[in-house]
Amino acid sequence: MAEVRMRVNGTARSLDLDPRVSLLDALREHLGLTGTKKGCDQGACGACTVLADGERVNSCLALAVQYSGREITTIEGISAGDRPHPLQTAFVGHDGFQCGYCTSGQICSAIGMLAEHRAGAPSAVTGHLAATGVPLSDAEIRERMSGNLCRCGAYNGIVGAIQEVAA
Ligand code: FES
Image 1 (cartoon, rainbow, N blue to C red):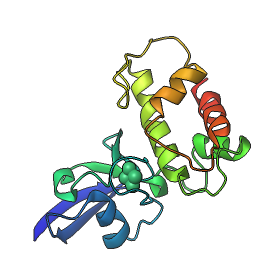
Image 2 (image 1 turned 180 degrees about the vertical axis):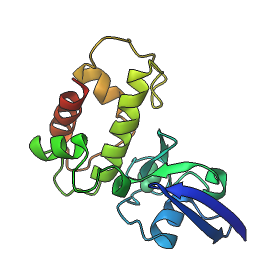
Image 3 (image 1 turned 90 degrees about the vertical axis):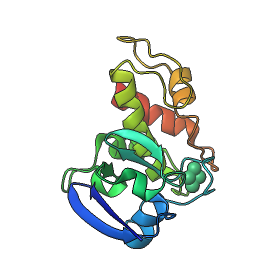
Image 4 (image 1 turned 90 degrees about the horizontal axis):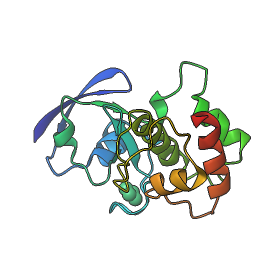
């Protein structure tokens, strides 16, 4: 067993885990944070996306022990008290979901993606360089969010919500 200490949504947590436990299973099974979803469990769908020190991570591909000492933010940690995060409000306004299974991953990924873009960093998904000072185009949002799949096909609403917050 290995001791894993992380801050999760602003709270210090300590877990005694088998070193093979993924970050996703640590969050869901050991901390009860089931807002993060398990889709493919092999890095293909993005449903499990969380933020590690602000950077988006497919938590199914990450071992929890690798994230000891890091700050993890899940969908449960992005609102400010009773106030939803602006992306949550925008997703509702644009119907950026149907079944909702991918939504927590979509929103966490969008938070990380917008931070990457503001910092002028290359896309974590495509490696493309950001055009700093240039608003995100529909096509660039789709490309930068291409690691997050929506089986319901609610992409127009997802992109519209992200564009609203990015503006
Ligand atoms: Fe992690 Fe699909 S569950 S990418």
